[in-house]
Structure formats: structure tokens, C-alpha cells
Amino acid sequence: MKKIFFLAALAFASMMQAKTVTLDVNAPLNPETITYDESGVWAETYNEDDYATIDYQSMSFSHVAWTDYNFWYGFTIAKCQDTTYSVMEDQFHCVAGGGLAGKGTPYLLAYAAEGMSAEPPCEVFFDAAYTPQEVSLCIGSWALHNVTIGGAGHTFAAGDSLVIEIEGLDENYEVIEGKKVTFFLADYRSANESDWKLNQGWEACDLTALGEVYGLAFTMKTSDVGSYGSNTALYFALDGLKIANKVADFEDIEIPATESVLHLTQTGDIQSGSFHFTQEVADYGDWGIYYFGNLPSNKSDNIYESNLDAEKSVSGGAYEGNNFMVWTSSYAGQDGIALNQADVVPGFMLNNTAYAVSSMCNGDSFAKKFGADDWFKLTITGSLNGVDVNTQVIVDLAAAGEYINQWTYVDLSTLGEVDAIRFALTSSDTGASGMNTPAYFCMDNFGAEKPAGYVEPERAKFGDTEAVENVETGVKAFKVLRNGQLVIVSGESEFTVTGQSIKE
Image (cartoon, rainbow, N blue to C red; front, top):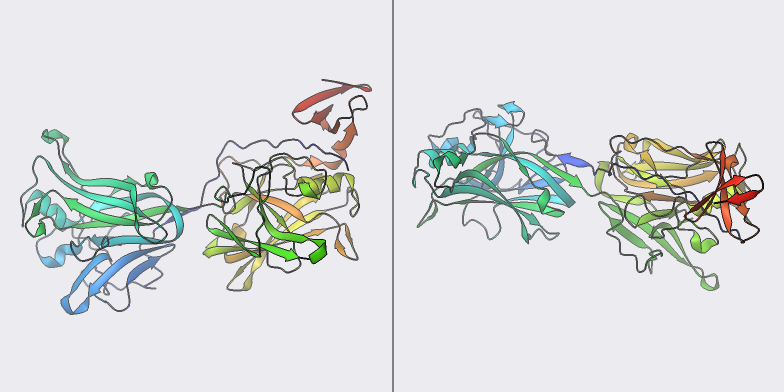
């Protein structure tokens, strides 16, 4: 069989961006609606039966209450405009007088009660692994009152501080040692008073140093501590928490060897990022074991000689990194993609395989060489709760004498909210036994947003390329018309053609 070399794709300068989820305090999932009392505090703050957490998209905030004692800790919701503290009912005030959206808008208020739990009292739980980006924080009015006026303790002076320690949680929602960010609400550590800092409103705190985590633990610590614990009221306000869900870049999949493919021992899911990719394993006895659906590959070249080279991209290797996914259809229909939770998937990078392009360019024992009217198509369908959504995304892998030969972005946002995605490949070259064109394509960075400045690459033309062989050396290569000039591409070498000779 012919050995085919394909042109390498141009790399895009922009990195793919993960989808970000930003806390919208005014739009919780549980409770479905927020009812406030006359002072602007969530009316269910002391409800100990129904709200162990306050749930938002992809994140849940801890909430503990004792109804009989009118006591709570963790997080609650408020939209108090008053910024002062004088009596106990003012505990829900923050010095910003509202959330990030302005005066009187909702924010989450945290009470980091001491000694109430073996765990940090203020925690946020994610529904999957995310990389926190930032959060906006603000001192509670009672805490500010203690810092500036005193109360149970002393007015802050040189050497004092009030901080929030933010730690990452693992998949069991346990604190990860060493993953911590410290944010100062009051920093009087310097002997020089001009260096002192005191929070007076919303400030952004960078959380990217935490890396990928499953949640956050917030702990307040003060230097003003007495025999009964903290003399500073441990209240702060939170808004604008932004987290990035991990794109399936497939680098988190362990492929057993270089230049190989991951094959499971039985049908199952392969997880990358926030997605589950099904691989179907079929044992046909004397005919061998076959693998369908999602096949993780780290094959870096684009040489196609036999079916052993089926899991290669036409441009050679992944879009970014080492690993990418090759999809091939099965007959059982168990080869889709499941999401950790229902969501809108931005898109992914797509490419043809070297196998499919070799077949379309040259024909093979099953398929014909493509002509100008032939086509090869990918149809992407999403579903929610087992019901297909109303729209589909259709990608022409080859059509009108052209084919995709570089990593190309596919927008999936038009599918809307889905919890599962499946693929179907069709071709104009179809016979009594089904499609003759090899049913393969490649994907990378699944779930990524389109990068800024992205320009869709030009497609290759079937008429501009054909397999050739240097009769003197026996080297097989690919003939390409580039800007009107005939060029031979062989591995990493290029040759220009003059007359009947090939010159480097």
C-alpha cells in the first residue's frame, strides 16, 4: 500500500480558553427563588431542614442553621444597603452596601464561626474539577467595627491583621495541603502606619495559584485573640467567584506507550476534563478484538500505510500537547460523550484522519477516489435527559473537491444545554453494506471556546495533490501545488519541481 505524507497544519498562536462559570448570586438553583425579609436578609437563613447548601451553577456553598437558637454559619444571602454595625441584627451588613452589581444588590455573606465544626465552616463545593480564577471579597461591617473601634477586643494597631485563607479541596472535599491563597482584609503588620491597609469595599482576589481543585475552603484569622477565641467578628462578603471548567485536552489520559493508542479491556468510559468518552470493545473471537468510539492517541506523524495507522491526524499529532482523540463509529451506538452535568458546550478542534484522507485522495480496496461531487460529512447531535435537542451541527469533512487537512474549530453552542453528545458520519461513497469511506475523525480540546483572533484555515483541494514516487530513490511523497509552484513534500523535506526532474 502507498505510504502517504501529508502537509503539517499551521499552529494557531492563541491558546484555547476553557469555559468559565461566574457566580450569579441572584440566580440560585436551590432555593429556586430568594425571599428576603424587610432588612434584606434571605428569609431562610435559619432554616435548618431544607438548605444544607445554597446551590448555583456548578458550585454549592455550605450553610448550617439551628432554627431553635436563631443561629447560623457558613454562607447566607443578603442585599442590605446599610453599611454600619451597632446591634446584632447588623451582622448581615457589609461595607460595600451591596454586591458587585451595586448598592442593594445581592451578595453572599459568610460567617466563619469558630469551634462549630471540625471542617472549615465556609466551603464551596464544585460539581467537577475546576480551576478557580478569581473571587471578589469585602469585609463585614461588624468585623470592620471591631478593627477600627474595638469591642470585645482592642482597636487594631501595629502588628495586627485580619485575613481570609482560601484553600483548595480535593475530590473528597478535603483540604489539599499547600494549596492556599491568603487575602488581607486588614494588614497592620508594618510598624509604619502609612503602610497599613484596610478593606473598604469589593476587592478582587486572584485564585489561579490554586490550580485544579474540587472546591474551596475559606477560613478567617485575626491577630486579636482572647481566652475565648477571636475578638474580631469573623464575617466577610463574597461575590463574582469565577471558575474555569477543564477542557478535555486529553493530556490527563495515560496512554501506555509513545506512538500508540489507549485500548480498554472492556467497554467503558474514558474521562478527560469534565467529559466522559465511551470506548466500545468488541470480541469477535477468531476475527480478533475491535475497538470503536473514542480512541485516545499520541501518534505524532501522518504516515498512512495500513489500518494500524488509522489513529493518526492528517496534519500529524495533536492540536496542542501530545494526546488527541480519534473517533470511529460502531454499530452498537455506545460511543458518545457524556457531560458531568447539563451545560452548553462551546466547541472543539476537529481534523480528518490520515486514513480517511488517504482513502478519499487515492481510493482503497473498499472506497473509491473522491471526485468533485463527492462528500464526507459529520453530524453532531446533542440530547438532554435522553431527548434530542432541536438543532444539530453539521461539518463537511470533505465537499466540493476540498477537504479539512488542518485543525479546525467547530462551534457547538447552537446545540444549547445538553448532557450527552453523539456523532454520525455519512459519505456519498455508500454501498449495500454501508459507507465505504473510513468512518474516522480527530478531535482535541473538547469543550473549549473559540480563541480570540481565530481564522479558519483553508482546506486542501483534491485536485492539487496526488501521490508521486522518485524513481531514482524510491521515496514516496506527496505532490502539492503551492501558489502555482509544484512542490514535493517528503517527511520534513521539500522539493521544487522543474521540468521532469526533482531538485531540493
